[in-house]
Image (cartoon, rainbow, N blue to C red; front, side):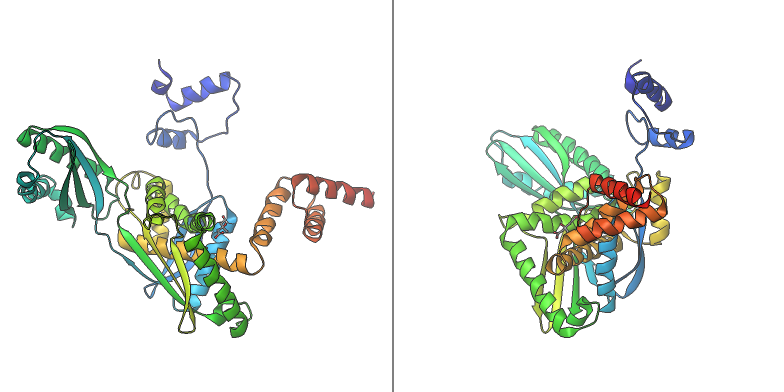
Length: 408
Ligand code: MEV
């Protein structure tokens, strides 16, 4: 039997025999996971965290996040707190559809005669996929272009509440077959495109005072100016832009993971969206307008709240229990808002205390967790690490040894 044909427990057995150590996994869970993927041998666990209050379009939400990086949740919370003090974010998801691409090989082809039939193909697809139309979606547009001996079709599909990859591929296959028969041309490929689509915009307008712990307007204004300057740099300098966008994706990916969405698709689309001007730029912008710090982000969020593995994953269902009844548009609006919140928290940290302070306290926490020491010893080690700004595991062990020597 081939490895992939074995059951998950048999695969585990075979790895154990090779001497590979595996973590314990509950049998029922293993069986559930085995139905989701190929060659399954175990589970990977991520903490599921919650953002308790996000005010978006005047409504309060609780938002699930799955990430192993504690600073991501802390940053999102911090950013959202500031947004909430200012009435929350205003967000709008366009949900105009996702792109599919069909390419044919052609010879002596009349584009005009094809284009005269485009509308009939659109109608035929919507008839064939009537259930999608019934759910509010369907094929919205077909556009064609001839490039040498290749006919390129772009098909815009509104997937209703789902992400829509499978449905779009099925529609493209249907159209591909029909068109190649009617025009006697050969289909080269038919597949959805992860090109940026389903854009979602989030915007906040913040009082300077809300940017400081002490609600000091003057200090807040100085901070706002620094944030705006950092944002300007992110529009001009790709080194900064990529890192700025990483901060946004920290929040975005954590919600995508928790809600069973395809984060690879969103990541790929965001890279392209960041490069739409021809140069890679930050996806967010912060500027001072009428005495306020105004932040905006526009992200291609081809996400869904149904379809894919969403229903079949019990862990993902928890995320939807937390969110309550959200539509795909609402979820996209929450994701864009949290991305912007993570971005603000990072810009504030960089332009005030520096990012290292927050990150290092998390590093200390992780190191202390694995240190074989009593609670009191850990407290003393932590104090020394912070005082002497030494953050490695070796530093922690050396401090522990010193403390023990002094106490013996
Ligand atoms: C770290 O995970 C993310 C940041 O580097 C983002 C940024 O620099 O804007 C803090």
